[in-house]
Image 1 (cartoon, helix red, strand yellow):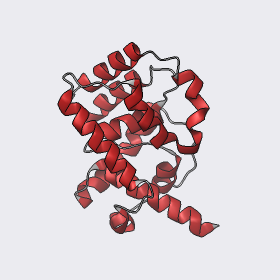
Image 2: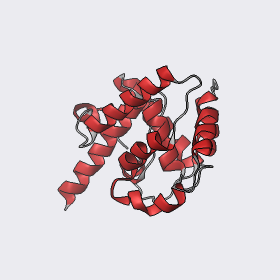
Image 3: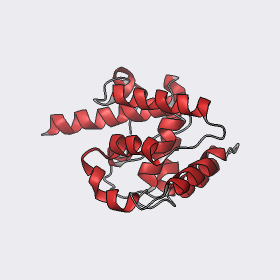
Image 4: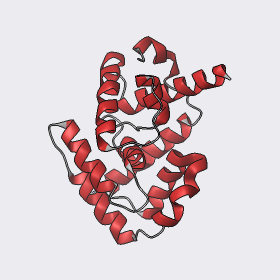
Amino acid sequence: MVKADDIRDLRTAARDYAETERLKQKLRTLRSQRDPFFLTGEDLEEVFCWKLGAQYGRQEALRSTNTQSAYKTVTTAAFAIRQADLDYEAELRLRILASLRGIGVPVASAILALADPDRYCVVDFRGWRAVFGEDRSTFEVAHYKRYAREIRVLASELHWPIQEVDLAIWALDQRRESSAV
């Protein structure tokens, strides 16, 4: 289990920290310009590149079948949902975003984390391994909710946005992996 002291000095250590901050700012700007808030295929391409990195091409052909209308409709619906129960809100939003072709829970969580970093994080193998000490390569909504609950505890303790805690955990896992080699 990751403790707050394990990541306290890693808040800005992830190699893509600057790109993460740029994307969060871009989405904040778009949110202020679009009412209701939505994302286009072009907006999402940057998120896909950020989240998927070297795996970007894996679902590219499938994602390319989504229409601009679908991207706008689906993202508008996902961002319109606000619930007092954050687990329930996350479940609804993730399922709606994952209805787009080529987008699973990890990519949907990345969209939410960049668009709403105070409430969402990204679920992936690095964070999962660091937090739960087990390898996992596929993620469902239940996995996201379990992971996010743990990250929220650390975020509360550190007084950081949940997305920044998650990114620090990602950096911790990467550092641990590099030192094990």
